Length: 430
Image 1 (cartoon, rainbow, N blue to C red):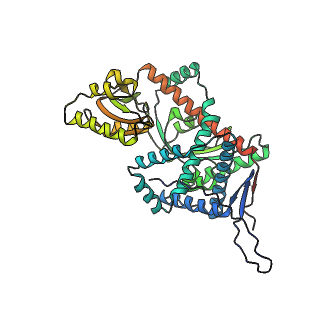
Image 2: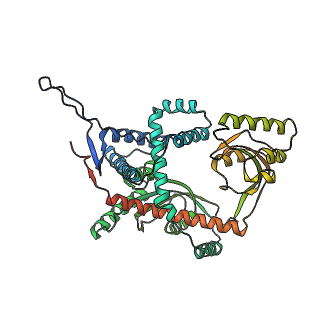
Image 3: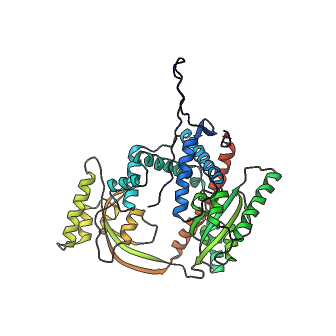
């Protein structure tokens, strides 16, 4: 289980003791002011410790303490700016939504909620702090969706051009890469641009000289993945900015790009590995059917599970027909078709449903599976791998273009938010 960074907002106010008996009190030092909020030394110290643990877990050399503190402080500033913007615009996460999110995380880790709580405590993380971290992550994700993702538009012309370029190159490569971003403020002066370019060139030279790229990312990068050593993982070429994809095509694994300039700033990439270049566009497909029991004030979670377990027993042991039971019991629109969902591709269903589906062999029926829609029984009928139909290629092209545009737009939005946020750094104050 990947440890999550914990955001802990603590400000200990100094209370005055009676004048006749002054008592010294420990006051948490402020290391940054972010609009009307603050970052405290204890908050920064905890986040630095967590960052160090994560870097060590990844076997990435830990940067000098001063560099790491600066990096973590910038993350805290940006997080607080986003949280403040979200609060001002009415973005909230209620307790029920938070409970369901944590349940899904526990299920993903194949644990009960009690087991998950014990695992967190074993990592030194109590549940209230973890809940707050997840709440903030959900808030930021919703903020991004509203301020960036919902405004992304993809035209039919863009789809046509994308497919033409893809067919012409015949390239469907995937890259495993690391990334360093040195962000530039909006309307940066020529002097600031040159200073940042010089820093980027220095980072590139150190990377090409054999310095650990993850340590360089943790020390200098302004990207959100800096404290994970700049790891972007595997990305297909069509889901990378064209600036990145073009630079990576000419690289061999282990090589580092030149300094790349984008509206967000300067970038340096390291190619770790590549795969799939020239492969035909094919995808696995699964033919399945399901029975859905929706929960409500009348049908509890326990009732839904019990009903589905009874139906499964009738199918597996009693020889009942899955389709006939789906027509009678399923609350999904597919009930009239015996629960048949036809052929589905990866990503067509919600993650919880897809994970359960992928674990089944043809002819198998799942145990009750929970998703945001309710509880399901799933039966896989058959699987195949084949060429993508035209409509699916267009859908994937639209998704790839949206993803590419969204990431670029989000980085630009973050830069603008940081520029208009009042920030006073006091890390060097004693």
